[in-house]
Length: 524
Ligand code: GDP
View 1 (cartoon, rainbow, N blue to C red):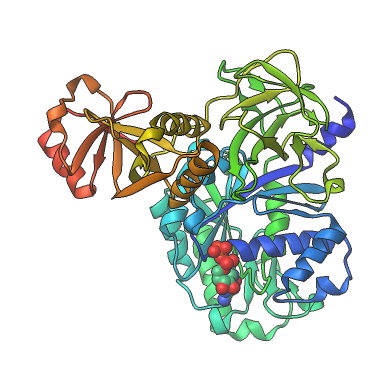
View 2 (view 1 turned 30 degrees about the vertical axis):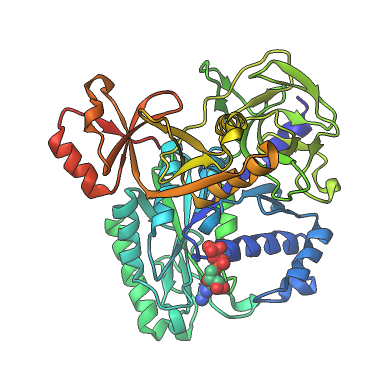
């Protein structure tokens, strides 16, 4: 591999932003993109404009700076780094794809609303990151509003998420009295709402403001100093090893909306964010990003919702080597070899922006049904498979039937293909073999219904059976079918394993009390 390609790989930083809806993910992403674009051409009018910018501005920035923006992958350059942000949709868009996206990144940025603290969706996404052991950076947002006390937020992080935290900076006041951040890491105070020149004030050796400033007299400044002293004495030490293994999260405070603390965050993040990481194959071989041969895996398949097209896009995380348009690759699962020419499509509309795609990058392949989630594609002669992507415990369930019983064959074929592709999870009831589908987000059912109609010509009837707690069984031989009841329904999954679908926590506890010998477990 040429030195040039190696350097390109080393410059990649690929991450996802995880947060609960409304914590500020979109705002933060916009600021990062705007910033990344604006900085390359410092001094432009746009760079000086603060606050909101119109969508049209954004499109303009896209064009000028060559930032590729799609709903799924965004790329920009900053400080000699090429940054890929992968979207993890929230709200109704939440699906297994959201979780799988976290399999394709090398680090995560967790955004927390200072007034709300750690919320449900953040916990779920955090857990997936934690299991992968990837570094997690925390940005506590909306300091321009009154929120929880910073010490309380740090405690919550540690208690709710069970991760050590290290405050890289600390707010001085908040809400209407937000004066800025005390930046422990860069030894300075960054002032809120001042112009560029006065933004940074240096600290002296004692860690106090080195210059005369009115802030010094405020109770907020004094409080911040006290908190910092407490952190210095009783808090965790900064530990790079722990950060790298996802055991400690560096915490930043700021306000994405007012673009405060975002640059400091970005610059510090880039100092510590991992470059593209090696990845294991299912034969435990480790593939290095700078190895000669191109390889990657599919972590997401996005169905085009346009009824006139059946196109889908398969998202590939490049793990090693360099991708070039027109190259020949092999799909390891089938052994089929083909050229990625017409079928290849970069995500950016402006193809110029991505003339090279290397390890760390994401490319979109035009898919007419050849790919499944988890597939490995390789450029070399030797084929292999990357480790399987995990299956996630679904929470929503529907009972599904074909509206027209004559279509039963197509119905089953469609379901099986969509299940294999990873779009939805399949279960069946014990004797009647009714089909039950499981998902982590409502959107998956909608996509399922749509694709069944458009791709398999089958209209389906879906009857919600609501939220359930799904648990697999360690010692299956102990299970008796008589244990099944409406509140703890026993079904089988696509691999014929038994699964209990409990109505709620209470039903699960009740079941465990009655059947102490049954060892339940959940997937991720
Ligand atoms: P997402 O759902 O996580 O993508 O959140 P958004 O970025 O859409 O933000 C949700 C709301 O919070 C919007 O109304 C934002 O304008 C607002 N918001 C985001 N960041 C801040 C901030 O730093 N301060 C304040 N006051 N509001 C913010």
